[in-house]
Length: 313
Image 1 (cartoon, rainbow, N blue to C red):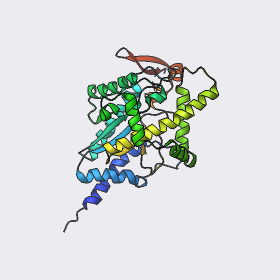
Image 2: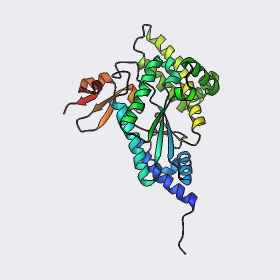
Image 3: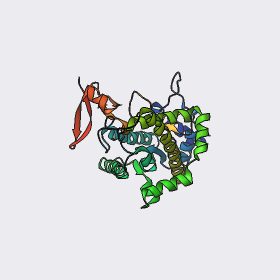
Image 4: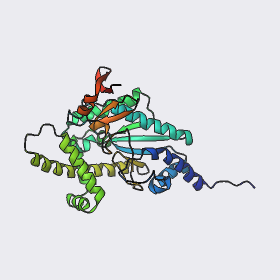
């Protein structure tokens, strides 16, 4: 009698095939001798296998794509540019590759979190709206059917943005005391806090006080950004409780969140919204602060808007 594969075993095997497509793009600061195997990611394997067992598209949620940095030395403007276009294309192509091994395919919900902490990063809400609207327009225009965008406007409707932030904070954020205790006790939380503080310092382009005062202000705001980001993650989990959670931040092997690298960059923390894309002479792309890219490349416009830099041969 021919043998058959048990459904759960089959789901696990296909789930591992799907996860193997993500592993080359794992974003981590772990110093390992080589890439970790799929078996080192039990959270992701279990959730992917659940979708496969049901014959449903695998759903990924990715908090990020909030808005452009307010520092003109780092970015070209307030709207998405080539860095975001390349990142969206990568995410959609990842879903296409998944569909080749698993016909129901996959979807990525980009959970644009700019409104969650716009007041803390000093970016106006109308700029955050414009950024997310442009992401949606690019997804439609370029036929990136596996992608969609979710933000606080969809979740909480037409309430004033400050009211939305207050509701998010009250219902989902950890208390400041709990967050401080976690940062003091957990090296990963401390690393994230330091990374956010560094970004806030770099992104504050119009500070008129002392450097030490800026550092103090950014440390205070970093706690707020972490708390609101955590709250946004909890809200996403309520809306998509079965989803596989991706993260633009580096994540250790085996963590509940899977850190994913959207584009090559010299720093594991660099994102398209804190930088610009540089097209290197060998045809590859990387992310750099605008001022650094301008030193090695020429500015390229697309549809009449600044897009990226092209390195000389």
